[in-house]
Image (cartoon, rainbow, N blue to C red; front, side, top):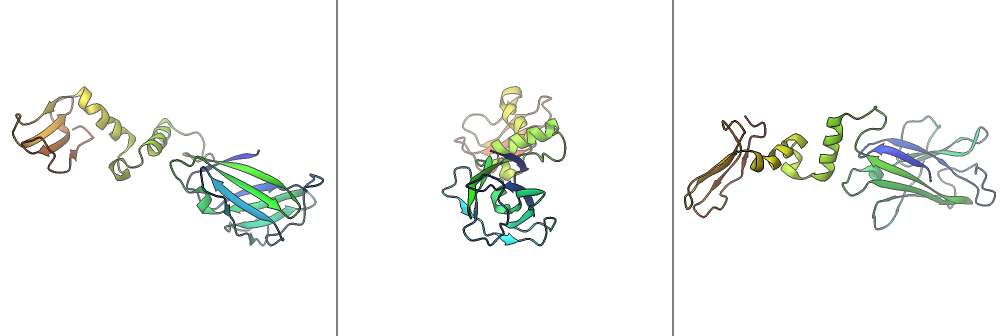
Length: 211
């Protein structure tokens, strides 16, 4: 099965389908966006059902991207090769959707499938840096922390703070502010007001720079 990589959430993406004749398995020529019986669909991981794509006409194989665009590339030089413009909805970034399948059937074609792996770094912009990799892993693992505003480094600081640093707070039975201090004990990393029973009375204050 042919496999591709695309950046999760990317837009205006084009792939090429090699569509074969169901009988001879040679490249099937002469298909168009409105050929009777031709069906192309996408299926995202664990989706309830495939999404049937409305095909649209492209003027030439080099036309600008158009959702559902479909056109034969060259019936002589590359028989059976078709350009297909993937709808943006197929590639939407979601934590639990690592890949998408594009399938086609009908119009005397051999049923076909290609896989599109949704990746966290654009495969066409060179090797990812360590920071890129950490950020991508964090975005996948902790998409809702801090309403999506905390960086990977800040999350690690927050998780490590209670184990590696000093803490302060009011005497038992008193209201006040509890805090985890930085290693130099000259600033709070996180602080929280509590009542005399130890219950939080407001949102925590974060200083994840540690100074």
